[in-house]
Image (cartoon, rainbow, N blue to C red; front, side):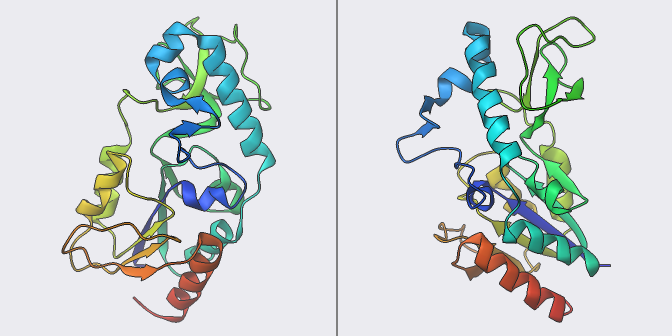
Length: 230
């Protein structure tokens, strides 16, 4: 069975009502990134950071998968599909995708402040100050902050190397190291990009461009791929 690797960014979740990571003013939900998404912010004001991610988690749980998420599930009928997502929501899983790698963590889980490999499910949307891991440290959102390592990036690169087809959805390729994953896809592999505004791609990287929002472009692409044998 041929392998399809899909890299998704904020654009696919935006149509489910979740704001993209950064607005044009550089803020995220009105917050300065440095105040809510760095280890320094957590050390300085953990209660603020906790509240910020509680609100993000509540929004995620209230959101629903859209037509793009649902369409990707259909590809599993004919191909071996791996989704690598930069998003911290669980919309791919709730849509029914069975093989999802979260580069930047997933907001519906918590992690130990001492050991990021200790993660736990969260009951509901609120993670409270005073909720502790088994080591006795405060639990925080299981997300990768600026200044932290991206532990799944090596695995993601290996998956891209093995792809028989590569699809990029809703990403401006502005956030590294995720943006560098396209460089691991073999030159001869067919590549597609679905986005309302196609970013400039590296020279020599030939992408089939679908300049539409994800909820329209992805179902169209999936329908074509299910009709064809790549």
